Image (cartoon, rainbow, N blue to C red):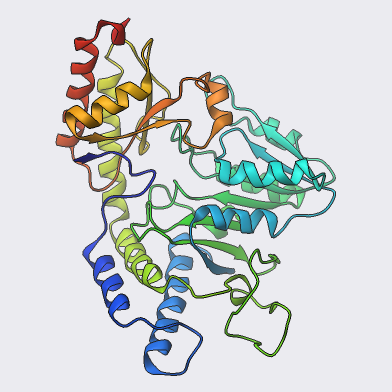
Length: 379
């Protein structure tokens, strides 16, 4: 199989991450629950992963709490900081992991919400974003990179706007981490949510939220933390207060090594994905009947096969050519509405370190063959 679905889950995992997961599986123990050697080693792995992640994202004043994915981390960041009667600013580029908890809070009458629409060029209008802020605004929630178009908003400028108005900045780093630098301290990100199984090349079932030590986050889940067990109320001290139940130590161990490998090879990863993405964009732009909507050079290549069912085209790529891509709305309905693809959906090929130019050439040939075979594809 030629795997171009890395925006969903990265196919490449470094050997060190695989070995770490296997070691942890063989010597399983619950971190923070016992004093025997293996439990202590598990706790040290969790602690070390927190430190490595903070170093990777450039966060010297933040706490890391582990979650099962970026979706849970975003729910924790949004619901855990919600202010009754407050106002939130977000954008149409966002994933449903941001939109759904915000719209739930709005529906329940707990907050008011402003959604900044993209420009005609599918970029973010910073003036519109700043104008959306009012005296009740406490949070700006924005993606680090769109999972549909690959567009990366100017986070540094957004951070300046947030600081100017004294509001928190939450960034969805699911697609950005491992592909573009996210200097949390430099940008002024108060809450960064990430997935371990995408650009950080860790195992599925891993995610995290990094939040500034001055930000209080209420837990979503209550239960055993291994701390203050004599009390019937949730401990208040993070990160344990946000990590009830047994952590995915196996996944965290793989995330530790995946993050280390990603940091060591960051430039190489970026150059490779940019080269393959640029090739895909250049070649597909020459095909009649194909409309591109993604940013050339980003790890995302999204397109529409004009006058043809995109789902059928995607199925043909898989069934006939063994090429794995994703079709649909990609859990980001508002950006599709802005594009005008909310009813048709789009085809997404997402590039990872596992891919080669040979893969990209095969992909382009397959698209060309399908377009040429069926005239309706190229009308």
